[in-house]
Length: 465
Image (cartoon, rainbow, N blue to C red):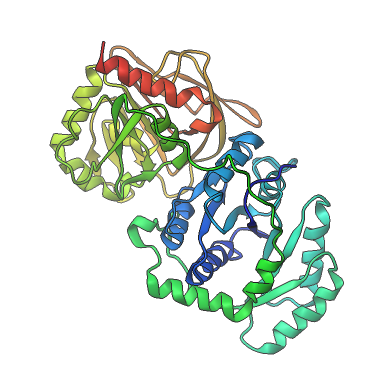
């Protein structure tokens, strides 16, 4: 178990998905910030959307922590790097407290991350229609892993009258390992809209100032924040934390970022900068041409299917990107970025939209989830991210499928050998064409330090052959 470098840290966990831990996390961040407290947010797991909402509320970039993609020391380093300049760190968990990559161990779970950080857990539970059974629920969770420490419990979706809260408080005397810190009334108008991949992104419709004030008031009415903060241990700080100086730039790397492409692990971007890349952001939706002087491209995931019409109509940019890919510019694309580089995309309404056409791949959106899970990949070929034999970890989550795969000279569909907990996978290909590498997998560059360096070096070689 590790101890990190922040004075006040709390992990917000849920008994399951859907109990309100995201809204509780955002409400706590908003309430603390209204008090003038510097808050640093983190998200357990591979989620891109929650971190965007965290950043909107805290005014600071939020970061992913993941016990499945990253080793414990790497998680501690990411945490310490950004928590060192804050007064309170709020770590939002994933799924239920003990849920992770598989049902038999803690890898990737909120419980695992709480122990890695040495931080106490605030457990959020749905108390609707419960009284004595609520104590049984909490007693089960708090007794399951004796190595966790507890900040307390929040009962969510409590009936509007005071009687329900009194019953829950009385029942909690039967769960002695922790205490009830508050009862949050059921207030469903305080919610974020959702779609097939989860919440609406912060870029599309995050919480405004009024909604943030309402969230903070909702939490403050139920919870004594001074009491909660007093329960968080002062873990101390080390003098060697903080951000590393950014080195001189070697290359300009174009990064697609707009409403259609907004899924990036911030650590990937930081590592590229540390490797010598000047990150130059551009919009495949709105820019008719790439920024000047680029030596490579990085196209992350997002929701290109929602903006397929506009992406398709931006012919000049599609043509420029495809031509650069054919002439050997290093291009790395994940999930939505891969779909953009393909031949065409069919949306749920049956519309077919022409994409960049660099790769002879066609994609079809599905009404239900196609694939979800952590991935370990081993490169079978030399790629911009590394030579054959390079390994990396990432996550795959999409509602589309490759409906057809044509052929073009030099293209490979076997750049990755992919594995999950149960063994090898046959349906997670990595496609390569020249210096272009694409896949459905979102790789985390923290899983292998050479990935960012290799991409920058590939760009440098293209710039100065």
